[in-house]
Amino acid sequence: MHTDSTGIDNIVKLLINLFPKPKQGIFFNAFLAQEEFTRLLEVERSRSDRAGVPFALLKIPLSYLPKNATDKNNFLFFLKKRFRITDSIGMIDRNHLGIVLFATDYQGALNYLQRLAQEGKFLPSAKGIEIYIYPEAQKTLNNLMVNQRKNERISIELQADIALSEQDGASPVQRVITKDISNTGVYLKTQNPIAEQKMVEIKFITPLEYFEGDKKKVIQLMAKGTVTRKENEGMAISFDQYDIVFSE
Image (cartoon, rainbow, N blue to C red; front, side):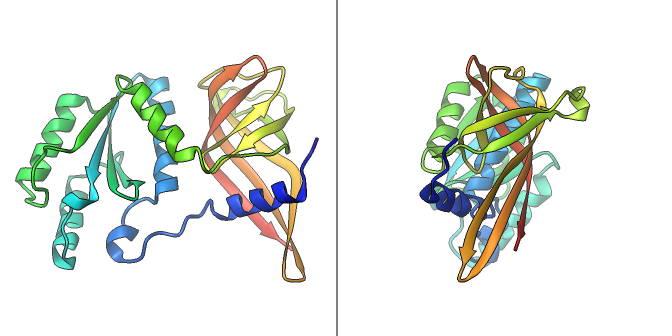
């Protein structure tokens, strides 16, 4: 197993950046940051695959949104009144806002968007706003998530223990090695990959040490996630949640 100092420095920076700093201001703080929103799309995709329920993604150009502070606050209030607990909003990229509508087909998403444009009077029109429905737009959404992740994933070998979550029946712990890791998931090398859509728990047992000045710090990472891809040489896991512990 190889983990050079450059790789450790990179993974430490990555883990620290798992808590992305939101854009400044109340308006942007109300949305999920880009990294968080990408991770949420991974979770929604896994949930849709398991339950057979579609979800909609609305891709709205930021240029469509209100410019002054009062209208921005009114827009947020308007959105929150029409949001279900299962809906989410966040940054797709620096130029687009995304709204995820759970258990919503194309017609439902179009109706929602038209109400947003007509009732709220905060969008110039529904034209120019893209609607993607999963699983019909699976390839497009997958490419979107890949493009969001491509600069975040780093190749590094870390030891980890993985087992099925209790809700999926639990299983003996299996020792694996990471191939690469990002803030949305990990690829694990193993000869005994777990079936797709199974929920798992992972404990990364290789300690990650780094220095802040003359003080040595240790990072421990534990995660829960869903197997999104099973292959002969390993499996891809999408993180549903994680816990990072920093200690000296």
